[in-house]
Structure formats: structure tokens, C-alpha cells
Image (cartoon, rainbow, N blue to C red):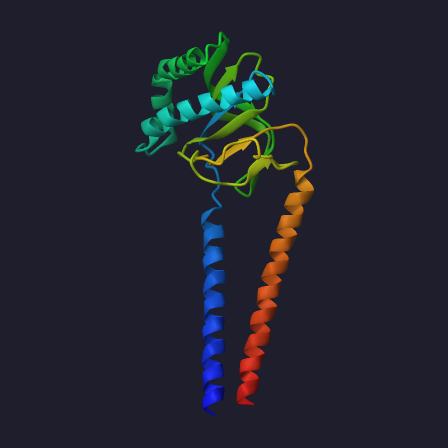
Length: 227
């Protein structure tokens, strides 16, 4: 009788720990899924080309501009306020870009524009956003023919870690450093990541079903001890 009671206690503890772990994972997944507001202000940076040097320039400018804007909009409450602040700092943004280019000893033309900008259909944070014009700060480097990076400036989501990319084909972030990024996305040449992502999703579903079946079997075993 004592052995049975001890076994039941151990199995119950294991079951409790498994359920708590699953609940914690589901909570994290729920917290990571955030929809972009309709009035959000995006940041888009188009590299001169897809060469390694041009992509590195894009990333350096991205980091510098992000640092400035995050400080400006951090305590703002509305997109209208954010747009006004960003508009008032366009000269500062242009200076930031120029300073970074000067630091890298590059004589490259660029433009900085705030207003409606065309975006392709995107999958962002688990949501699909149709192609269209969205309010954005667009920085075009040189010819602007390289892979472009984008994120959400307001609400300030550029520091969040989301799985992003085109709605048709997920983006490959392997070329990006793993540091502070949001909600962000990068358009790149076609790759084979779609099949890999689908496999990861399938594996996740299989793991969930495994745990459910395991819990069910464990519960039945506990009930059997009382039979």
C-alpha cells in the first residue's frame, strides 16, 4: 500500500511538472505573437546591392538609425505624435546616415523619406499583411537594388524577436547578426527555407501530440492503480 501511494505521488508530481511546462511554453508563444497596428510607422532600408560590403553598410546604418529613433519615440502614445517627432528629426537621420558613410569612407548617395511607401505582401509575427502602401521611413542607399531590411518604428517593436518574412516565402536571417532586432524582416533572394520551416512546424505539432498522448497514458496508469 505504501509503495502504491509513493508511486502515485511520484507520477502525480511528474504530471504536474509536464503540465506546467506546456502551459509556460504556450504562454511564451502567445506573448510573442503581436499584430502590427494599422497606423504603425515602419522603417525600411534598401541596400545599394546584394554584395557583402553593401549589406554590411545597410546593417551599420540600420543600427545607428534604430538607436536614435527608439530614444525619440519610446515615451510617445500615438502614431501621430511619433510621425511628428520623426519628421522633425529627418535632418538628424540624414546626418546619422552621412556620418556612418563618412566613417566607412564611402562616397555613396542616399535618400531619406517619410510617408506612404509600397510594401509587398508580408508575413510578420504570425500575421499576413497584404501588399500596399504603409506609412514608413524609407532610407535608400545608392541604387537601392539590394536586399532591404524593415521593422516597425512605432509602436517601437524593432527590438522584439519575431519570425518574419514574405508571406510567400519566409525570410532567411542567417546573414544577420543575432543581436537586438523586432520585429524585423529582410527581403532576400529565393531560398529553400520554406520546406525547412514547414518541417519545423510539423515537428512542433508532433511533439505536442506526443505530450498529450503521454499525459493521457500516465493518467490512465494512475487510475489503474486505484482499480
